[in-house]
Image 1 (cartoon, rainbow, N blue to C red):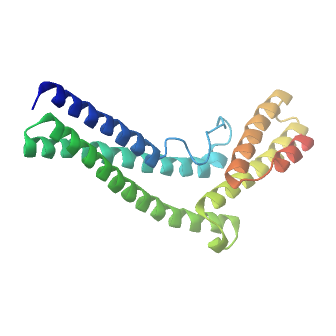
Image 2 (image 1 turned 90 degrees about the vertical axis):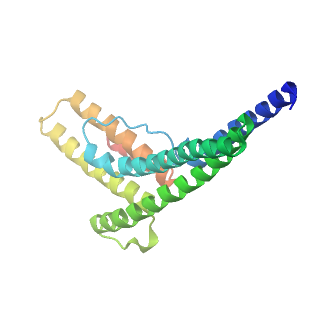
Length: 202
């Protein structure tokens, strides 16, 4: 093959590889479907825990997708290179292997997530004292977290009134509670009425 044509083919396969990597990033879900974490956890890790677990599972799916893509691309490049003995063969193999590996990694990650969802949903429903039939795991996690923040707000307010904590301590606790309620409201796709209600109480 003419060197110019070979360079052109290599460039074309590199472009395909870049497109594949971009698709893999989208498949893995670079941006969280729950939005960015906005709560700085200092006082109430127990309240944020259900949301933190939700985010951790989402990250595991992303990592599984990316890991499958990387492994598939390497294996595809090796097979393609050995089969053709050419650079473009290795690149084509990397593109195909990366795409297949991403899909496989994503399927595996989501199957693990579904298993966790079932287990945790039952636990959250029991803690909420409700039937889990009408809830998904994200809804149950956010509702449990919001209930915890509500309880902690009442405790902090009582401590402040009793003189057990200073106004600054109460304010610091309230800012974390407020942030946690805003984050759970976004997950539940609710309005900010609950936060406004807490602001009024504060």
